[in-house]
Image 1 (cartoon, rainbow, N blue to C red):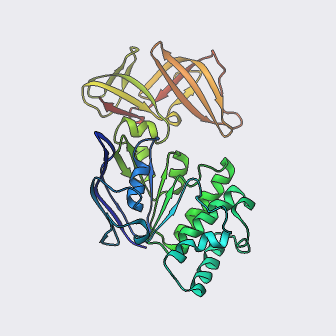
Image 2: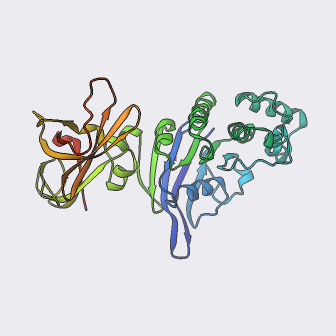
Image 3: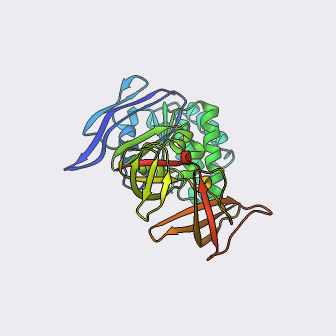
Length: 350
């Protein structure tokens, strides 16, 4: 295990930057997740750390050593791929042993480490099977065992759960997190799945268009997003576009006069988290903002219910309520009132 440092790491293809000036520090034993939409630069960054892509500029340091231009097999980084990348003609044990054989370890040591790695991922007794004889979740565990067998300084995971079904994904992500904590591994994972990132990370890195937009804990990014992109990507937000007319006064493009906190006079967007908006049949008392509206759509999500409310021809927001006995669930077309405190809205100037 070791600390990982990325210093102004960039990758350019012609005039296009796949990653630009990425600087991060991953502490020894930390689980860092790179989160962002497809094409945001997260996988490019991970592959530069692994040594599969040579950076245009910047530096990768692992355990204090500069590994920027070392080949992958000299970095002692364990990589788990989205597609598992198992050799179909080799048994489970032979797949796990592959990296150890490339390092020319003694056979007795290879066999011991293979057995140890398979036990870690709960696949003892599966060594003689071929990958095609395993389920998707088991194949992903074999890929994880192969990465762990070399005793890596850093564990790199590239969308490792995206090929699994939803239920299995939940199980395997818990297993990976528990193993990482048990072994004290420094780990970096790439994903575009918010729930996955929020569940597994010690810290999150939100990326877009090749650049880092914000780094922080789950609470930091959810409660205090740095900009409109982060507010929209981490969790859910409804955005009302308009203008900050004066400190504490926001007017939407639909003409709604609202009380807010923060923001500078000028064009802006007011972001509201769905669970922080109250809804009822009558005007809410004691809230800074209380508005009439009409229910346009109701989405039943099991434990939660999303209610889409039209406030003006140009303004609509989503309210999220718990699904519980006696709770208020309006019908489409019903007149309602929604309300929220000034501090519940986040203002982002253009």
